[in-house]
Image (cartoon, rainbow, N blue to C red; front, top):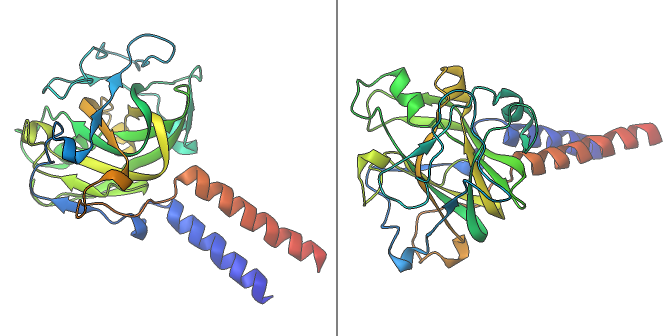
Amino acid sequence: MKALTRLAFGVAAVALWLGPSSWAGATTYDAGAAPLATDPGNGVVLGTHLLGGAHPSVAGVGGSGLSASGTPLDGQRTYIYDRGAQPDLTDGVANRGDAGFAMMIWDMGQAYDSLRLYTHQDHYGEAFGNFWMQDMMEYSVWGSHDGDNFVLLSDVVGFSGTNKDDVTYTFAGTAPSVVYRGGSTEFGTLNAYTREYVFSQAYQYYGIRTSQISLTANDADPEIDAIGAFNIANRPPGTPGTNPVPEPSTMLLLGSGLAGLAAWRRVRR
């Protein structure tokens, strides 16, 4: 009985980790700007936004935002309209060829476990409010080993704040280790709320599509300047970061295994 109690506690813990307020993914909000991407000491490699080839980006519904922008950090943007994301956001899996599949895809050249997402903010100068807050975080982050099959790594499901300097967000999956409210050193608040992630696995391909809060707000057009990647083990001492948080798919498998073991023990009694 004690063993079953411990198993039940484990399954409950898994459910909490899958939920939106993961304590292990506490985010540091930095009022300044992200370090220079071009500084070799930061170890950041900019990915190539894929428009052709075997694993190209796939536009969503409406608009024609896909462009060559999104490879260099240049103050330009690439984006898609992504109205059909709900099924994939719900089950955490997106496969090329599935109905409603849409993804802006970057090839990092090799596998990296950490990501810096340079946002492109086109409404930063407008009045502060609920629209502004969801628009700053209109991105979910996906990882892939082959460029065709993606797992959801991080989604944005809530927000709060009273001005542009204190907005905080609630994440499902892995929360960012750092959010730079000041954007980038290169372009300032044009890249406001640039963020860094540390994942428990390394991926060569990273995909971006709408977040839950942006889809709910009927504003599903995530706009990206560029994506950088690095391996956390190579970061200089003292670089902001956090311990990797298990992705939803990994924790779901663990939870299923624990629940199955508990059921097996009940049958054995």
